[in-house]
Structure formats: structure tokens, C-alpha cells
Length: 260
Image 1 (cartoon, one colour):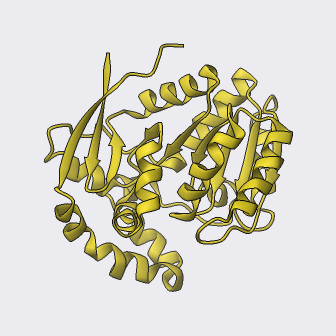
Image 2 (cartoon, rainbow, N blue to C red):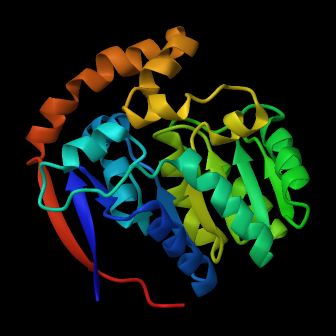
């Protein structure tokens, strides 16, 4: 059996539905070997073009799901269209619910001061059986240092979680996860971006209908124009060139994960 991975420029995206992505994450947890789960969007594609380390991190990830609706729309021109958007923020809630149901301890890593604690408290009230093994909001460089990675690894190993939600923002988040993964196995690490801010109520997420039409970026830009204007209006405007520069689409057939 094989699974399909679609490369959109320099970044891979697994051709999975939300339900299939959740099953894959559960498979990684129960297999006990650890793993990295990324959720690429247009900005990640542009950043990966510039950053070889980020390209390597993406190539090593066990699962990549399409966070950005534009990637889903664009994939319809490919031989392996993506069935739907599977954003990190959409994965988080069912992953946490499953962790509570299965008894998997959870560790929240990242976010601003107090964000992880607030998110943990809200989830604990929603899922009384949820085991939160720990939280941390470390200061991490744009390119994580060996000392920062080892310090975080010590915290995670001591807590012994099965799942670690990492909220540091791209590309720092993906580079940090890639460096941390082997040190904290069998924990599975998920890059969740702003999801902890959404859960803690620090940032308002776009309404569902806005996300469905691919305009969540406009909603976020309106909320945080000073922080996001350069990203959305300047950097991400180079996406068409990056996409074509890397040969547009490439389809990879990979061995399916072992059944659990």
C-alpha cells in the first residue's frame, strides 16, 4: 500500500482528508517512534525556497497537511488534488479530544507568556480527563540554537508526553521541531502556529465562511496589519515565481504507515 504526497514547489503536502490526517497522527502516537507533523501554507512555500534547512525539515516530516486554502485550490490543477484544507488550528481540537479519550499526556510548547497555560486551562475545563504534562514558553532564536533545543528537550523528556503542540510561528517552529524530534521520541510533535492564541482567546480566528473562500489571510491582516503586512503583501507575492521555479508540481508515492 502507498500514500500520495504532492510537492507544491519546494514543499510536500500529503493528500489526506482531515479524518485521514487524524488517523495518521494517531498511528504515529501508537507506533511509539515519534514524528513531526507540519501544516504548510503559501508563506511556508516561499520561506522554504529561501531556506535549505527548512526544505530539509519538510522533507523529513512524517505528515504535512495543507493549512492554506490557496494550496488546495492550486492542487486542483495537479495530478493529485488535495481533498480539503487541513489547517493546524482545525487539527488541534480533535487531537486534544483524542488525547483526553486515549489518555495521551499533552505538552504545550510556545506562544507568548501565559498563552500555553491559558489554553491548557480551557482544554482541561472542556476535557476533564485530559492530562497536561507541562507547558513552556521558551525564547527561541530565528534559527534555534543547540542550547535552546536541548533545554526544551530536557523539559519535554521529564514530562514524558505523547503529543507536543509547538506554537512558535514559521519557519522557527518547523526548524525547532525538526531539531527536537529525535531527542523527545516517542512524543509526536505538531506545529500549530497561532492555534494556542486562538484557544486562549488572545487572537480571534476568522469565521468559518471566510476560511472556506480562502480569505483568512485578509481577516488576520486586518487584525494585525503592522506585523503581517510585509508577509502577506510583499513576501508571499513571490509565490507564483517560487512555485514555477521549483517545477510546479511533483507527485511522490510513499509507503503507507504501518497499521496500528
